[in-house]
Image (cartoon, rainbow over all chains, first blue to last red; front, top):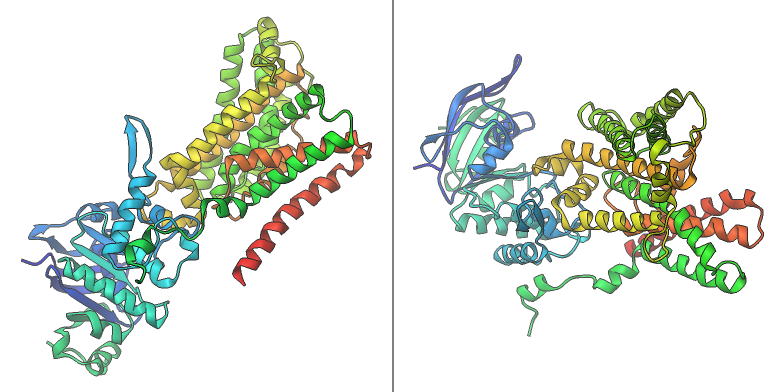
Length: 247
Length: 332
């Protein structure tokens, strides 16, 4: 059974049809590349899965049960985690503080509860070790490289039992070596049985790490193929519209 | 044998000591201590118990408000209204007590006034999205005007049946001969420091100042926190007003004029960054102390009081310049 299944999803803002009748499903432990030009509807689609928008038409199902999201917090509760394009990090806080931002571990009784620094450092350290990333929980994010910052943002998704991780352009603004680091992090999530939706402009990354590619153009899904059965040339053609649609 | 991943993760880039040594607050504290040592030798009157009693007490009013201001500054905001709010809260206290009510009622009315003003600031800033500078600039004007309305622009110096209690509250020294205001300041500073370091509320204040958008995305209740922070700032001004009234024994409608600038100066000298995200309770106290030591020493050294502004302004520039230079060197 699919972890996430979208059926005939549409979204319009007034007269603008941002997403038009899109259906697809994602299995556990699958990495899906979501590609398309600017304005193709990728972000709108992802924001519906993340609970920022609710669809105008269509249904979403998670593990077979209908999924209705009104707020991002509800998506999180259902095991949908997002790594935002700008990573949403506070430079003035430590890596551990950023990982636990909004979900701090506290100790104490009743209303008298204080931050549990030791537990948060320990847990953050464990997650970084799991992710095979040389990131120190006690260091300020300000001092970190692009790859480490990605690791901090991805570590957030490991706090709860995430089923789906949505990653918005995770490799857009970092160096070549760090891109390899981030792709490894994605493989690592996949190996844990987590479904990953990778939104990216970078063809090599998608072909490197994804199992399947979905191409959007002008709000419609124009392709949904196994990576092995496609090629960068074909995907480019689909994105630009040189190739109309493939099965 | 290569360093393992676990060892790297357990390591911290900067040691605790290095971190302290690189903070602006630490160096301002060193400056305050050096100045005190210098003044004890250079003048006969500095290290007397009477002068120290005066200095520590004078520090408190700016320091208490600087604690509240520091929270606002950490979130990336500013509160220009504190001087006027102090005046209004003092005047409400005075007028209520003058009318024959007890000190408890007077203090409750005064605190309630402060909280209402702070809540208005917070709502306009966090929910309507008005700039903090503008909102609090308006209150700077409004609160002082209301103080004049409440008192008919007269001096209040009789505080009804609880007159003596009020004067003892601000002017007494119940604890080992330390002036009462100093005790209040220490308690409030410890409380503020605790909140910033150990509570989720404190953590969120830093997060908002560091990256407000990120705080929203990660589910931090940004608006509520901002309202609370502006309420605390006004509250600190109200508390300082109550204590100052007890100490002075009289209220005029021009007390606290220009105080907001001294308070902001104290916070900034103590290491709070106006861009947000950085600041400590200790910094607020140390910054206020440096300003007071400068003022006091100029008097004792026989330097014309007209020079005060130059020295305080110089201290602001020097403290921030020092910090800039240090960061400049780091980035190279």
